Amino acid sequence: MHNPDKFKDLFLIDSEITFLNFGSFGACPKPVFEEYQNWQLVLEREPVQFIAFDGLQRVRNALKILSDFIHCDPMDLVFTPNPTFAFNIVAANLDLKPGDEILTTDMEYGAMDRTWEFYCSKKGAKYIKQPIELPILSEEHFLDSFWKGVTEKTRAVFISHITSATALKLPVDSLCKEAKRRGLITIVDGAHVPAHAALNITELDPDFYTGACHKWMMAPKGCSFLYAKKEFQDSLEPLIVSWGYKSDNPTDSRFFDYHQFNGTRDFSAYLTLPASIDFMKGNNWNEVAKSCRDLVRENAMRFCELTDGIPLAPLDDNFHGQMFAIPIRTSDPMALQRKLFLDDRIEVPVTRQGSRTFVRYSIQAFNSQAELDLLYNALHRELKSGELASKA
Image (tube, rainbow, N blue to C red; front, side, top):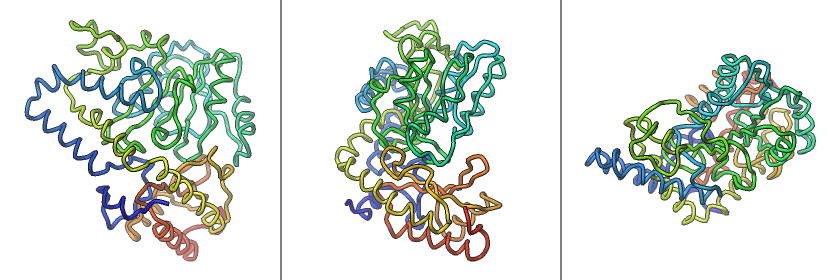
């Protein structure tokens, strides 16, 4: 078991806040943030050389280090500011015809739902949100629910590797294999996955995958990636046409040229990934992450018993990582979230999944049992006051 107090001193999180929301934006360790500021200084001292001459090679070097971490060919990666940007590239370029269907679940991230609905409406396609029966009893149970939504019009499947609202890790490997057998394009939202769950993109073999490096990898905000299988790369037109289109100095990758340089911007965040990976290696991160998963599960049933709810899936590594969604009932989720923050200084999201509401806690290296006790006591108080219903 690692010592959370040791890591509190290594992060910049406000010491007066009980920060149980690492899943939303992550946070930088001090050494990574210092590296970020160092690159920004390099930029400001000589912006022309940084942006126009040296920058893209430095970006490619960072992509190579990232590719080693997530196990794929660096030529199949580009950096993006966030997963939404990445999937806009995919959705805008997917060759959908009127009547075609994208099959997904009813547990996807709201920005992704909006992205697909926008592009499907433009192309006359349909975005099919297949209801998933909760609780999920097993991998087979989930897959049976999901594949009930497939039809002869299904062209692609879109799936979260780890869901946002419910914090569930889904059996994406099995789903990708079956989708490939059916001849379907596979598109995976892995925003929460890098440094949170095991990720080997080569073995998973999706057609498209995105992950956020500014969440569990602890890079600065605005650092994510898009993976695209080689056979799809030439069909991806850039969202922003800039110097990479018909480049005067093309690299050996049109995918990189088209999508990596889209005008003046500070891409220092991308260059911190080597420091982030070094930080994890230097702090035995596999052991730290296991301790965090253990703490998540040790408290899960305690919170469910408080709200008279049940876990959304078996409490094991197949379905849960460093987050857990506590089922609750409240008439005003936003008011509850603000009350927990303003009255108790607890930063924790209150999420929605259909008609259900959850308090989703995240556990990172600096979180402790005492902090979960604070959340427990705050929710217990709200139950006694009548702000929360006694049954979830």
